[in-house]
Image 1 (tube, rainbow, N blue to C red):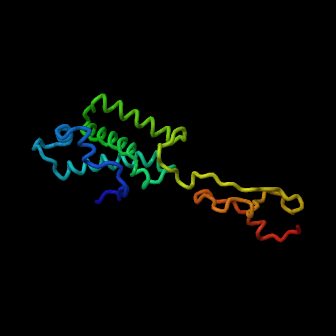
Image 2: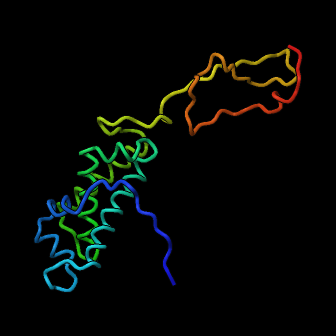
Image 3: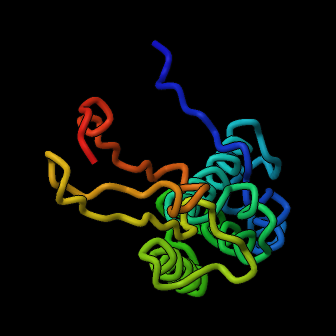
Amino acid sequence: MPGPLVVAPTNLYCVQQDVENMLGAEGLLNKIDDFGNRSITTTEQQAITDAITDATVDIDFCCGQRYSPTWLATSALINRWATILAAYAVCARRGEDPPASLEARMLDVKEKLESIQNGTNNIPGLPMRRIMAPVWSHTRVRIDYQFRCLRVETRNSSQKPADSLPQNIDYQELATPERQ
């Protein structure tokens, strides 16, 4: 029976060469070589790809709401963070303890990603998504209307509202003729 369908992200934030540069060629081979044949098989290659994909998904989870994946892929800081997360995943995949220095760096990256997710920090040099841009709506209450509620003055409001934050529409107002 086939496993669940997994869709890989289109933008990976690091590559195998980045992980190899961090761990060293021998270090990566020691952590990934399951059969002791001093070469990387397709199964072991898939483990490296899974670690890189996991790092990308973790970063998308924390930063994807505020930043476009296309812009995240251009950031050297995001590349470094993804490399640290992927290297940690490679080192920990067989249940072995990763080096303490790598674990400390991974915890630091996770802390920074959480602060970006919470909105207390930003990624330097990257523009935020349009949905994070402020929009405004001028509202007023018309007491001479039959239904007294806030109405949006569209001619004075933002002409390009955020895509993911639709304005509430008073359908009753649209369907009910009222004297003005």
